[in-house]
Image (cartoon, rainbow, N blue to C red; front, side):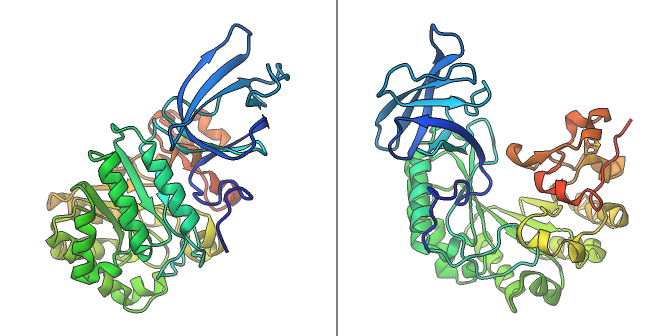
Length: 390
Ligand code: SF4
């Protein structure tokens, strides 16, 4: 099965923001960077200049809901159902003849990722994007196209999957394009590092980047059987640890991640102690909440642990790390789920286009500093509750 973004907009990188519009005179999908837009003399009408990866320029007329007619018969034309443009200068968009559109790279965000493959060598019980054995050629081509249109000044980009190291040649291609196009950009590789237990592979990976690779690696427990059970792969715990040590030997900085679930929360302090004793070199540690989509949604009743049942353990874990000077943060937790003492650790970690604030958040005094919930939490209102802070 070839991943067909034309039929299923949004399917190749579920993280992105999507929009719908009426497209006229757009014969094939346009993957392009927004170079400029300006309002024309006619009210409610703007024109957008797009540049694609081959440096072809498109000028597209855009209108809001009140202006329905294309200015000229042959001119590419988009009509949005509300008058606000869903993209900005510097963003990379995909616009399809059907009127489906996606912002595949939002220039103002630090949370952009390209998807390399949907295949994975683990099968995590809480995976938000369940693995599929799809051919990766389309996703790879798209990733390369997106990267080759990025600003040289881009701060950060994520490379994700599936497991990106399974697409070994594709990963090389993508990292080499990054080195050429965005040599100063931080490249965050989200990997389980199992393949990198082989030192030769890890060295090869290090040689493809221009020294700005940052590995984000999950380790869900200090107990091998708990980690292996959560990732659905026997031996994964030791593979990942070997991968981490190899990357450290090669001077690749590492962020270690844990997703808190009912299977691992009781050992958060032991996990923190294990992390310090065995990996004092980590650059950052992220303690994360579940994103209730994919397998995490399917298994939500088994997995979800009410935060108030683990705040004391979380406090202990963070104290252990802080005393050892190991930088740690809490991701994907709304502030009202945690006591005051832990809120300074919280980061606004949910991508802008996935954030959801329930209506009651309007009454909350700390909404400005709160990262909210995942959009997908809407379906679990009885399980994942929020309470405004006064
Ligand atoms: S009530 Fe809403 S805005 Fe306030 S802390 Fe909770 S989730 Fe955040």
